[in-house]
Image (cartoon, rainbow, N blue to C red; front, side, top):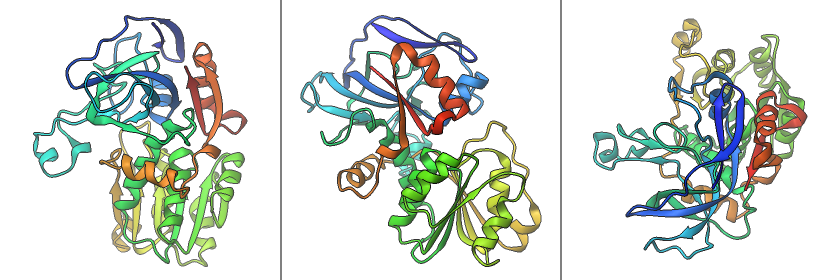
Length: 341
């Protein structure tokens, strides 16, 4: 069967691999669409993500929609449209027993060694991590339910946002989905910042009250100005670079809350001690999502969250190299780029 392989840094090629067979408890899925997320870009451009490296060639991709090819005894009819939770927890460790399945000490993840990712015609996955999606959701857009589940989790980790001044720094897919979650949670005012004008325009379409062209070290001051110098109650860092987190810290009011969703390339943050200490700020870091797929699916089914504006480009699998190049440079207003099968 056909698959997409990463052979090295910025080197994606199509190839062949054996057809998989589902083991007990697994279903066989036929891939429809895989979207390229920030961690995929780290792997593509740096050869690692979160300190995890692998031997090449390797199949990338974990934001995926598919249809059931072989239910293998699961309660799923062939042809059923689905998405998958890419993280499989053990269910037995202390974190799992505490309900923190996303922090499982033996977690397995789609597209991290030893598991190839989803950019292949067929793949197997545990049935309990497979979720049916309504036929009304475009299968090319459906992979965005995975980053939406992250935004749902980020919102549930954040103090009540009703009536709050909220900042979202970084308007990639997760930032734009977090913006929509903040609006649903009743934020009084949402100000967003990003480097890319097209992303700021999307943010306005999705409910931002004010947009800020980030850069030149002035983001924090512009966020403060937007709140009359008061500072935001809640800031979401959804960009990744350390300077984005610093801007959030400097723009948050005393006793405010900062939720960190972005994944940095570096392994170290340099944090400004004075505002953190003097303002008694709270930093909340987010690790993927925790059983949030059902809520994410319901939000889209009920029309409360929009996915379609974020799916900006579609490429057939034999053009995956172009798809990654576009996603990395954020050209042509790209937010989420899909590789279709």
